[in-house]
Image (cartoon, rainbow, N blue to C red; front, side, top):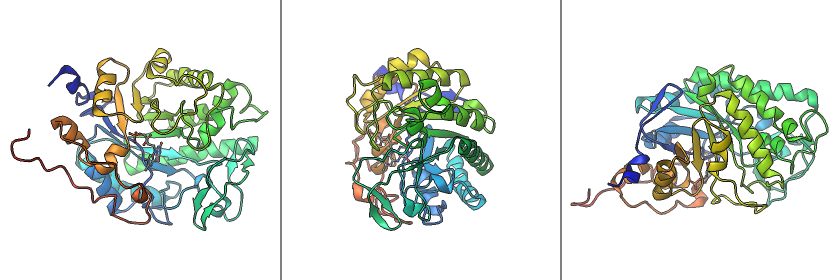
Length: 371
Ligand SMILES: Cc1cc2nc3c(=O)[nH]c(=O)nc-3n(C[C@H](O)[C@H](O)[C@H](O)COP(=O)(O)O)c2cc1C
């Protein structure tokens, strides 16, 4: 085994947690939680199957009914939802791994069909250009969202704080604040989607304000070193990409550096779409301004992940799609076993309680003589 092959399976101390390796289960919406948006035993089984990861990050979980925008995704804005998550946390803890909950508000990437006919909310009334959104009433074209009033924003922050409290009560080791992929906090951060003229828009400092307030609120519930933030500086998903992306994300990362976070999770790779508005941002740029643990993601293979950790570009690497069809991804990496092909995208979000394409991927069976 080369030195590089060790890097990914080295342990890491993070916020007083001992991660058994640097491999992270990336947050992935799997849309199995049903209309009530409740975790259940099949969801626990899915995470347990992947619990050899050093850290698990759950699928995005909405902090409020206003934040909903995905059919059958889970929530954590009611006590029942919080309690339902406890069975997942307990099952993962029994495997000896920590688990963070990803906190989500879809903002404009939603539809009035989720909100009793009321428009989805956003920093500014700018419609998402895209194929349309899956709603409880079938696929619908995007709508022009309603701009949140300035005096509504403390309520949005309060929703994140209440969700973090429920996550703590459910036993989660921490939370990841989802400020990536064109959802509400990313919409506020980026000039493409934020055309406000109040204290939450205009300058990069102002566009960062809502994320800063959410971080301040959530770090009042969990210790700061149990709170991660996810950013997607290069992403085009949900019709994102801003001409001033580099300035925006360097500012955000520099400000987040002062919070003592568990980690900054940067989707640096281009495998989830690239806006092509300049040279893509690299982990090295984030390292220069953010001095805490750095997590890379997007299109990594074992080899590129080992190399990123071995050269010090990242402390952790999150894997998404490889973990869908390889529940035993960590063991496959450890032994150099081949990976299963990518799963069928039709089963990624297939619906309530469907085990197909979710918990039915087999583990690798080594042939006689292989290591
Ligand atoms: C089925 C699926 C669901 C996803 N859901 C989320 C999500 O809930 N939250 C999030 O931040 N990213 C989400 N992503 C993005 C992944 O976390 C990850 O960034 C992306 O898959 C790229 O990493 P990979 O190349 O290792 O798959 C999702 C991706 C996929 C394929």
